Image 1 (cartoon, helix red, strand yellow):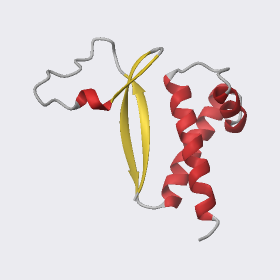
Image 2 (image 1 turned 45 degrees about the vertical axis):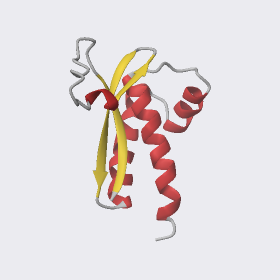
Image 3 (image 1 turned 30 degrees about the horizontal axis):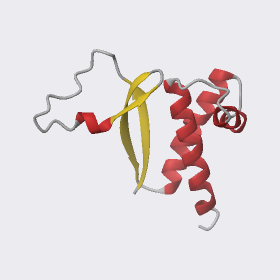
Image 4 (image 1 turned 90 degrees about the vertical axis):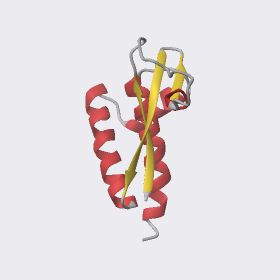
Length: 106
């Protein structure tokens, strides 16, 4: 299976765990805009993963009127904020670029 980690913003009032073995705290990521929660998505094949990721990338491209490669360049240079969409867009683009070379071997 192929996996992808997705990040989503959570409310400030989120209970970060009771300290009694609650493992939600280990799934949280702090960033300058607040706290986000990681979620792992599993795919049955690299083709399934690439298809799903491509659809999400196209959605971001359309929403922000910028192609993913240009966005990733700007994001990597610190010219884009760490919003939930931008963190996930960056993760999706990196995942897409990691999977793509392996598919050319199939």
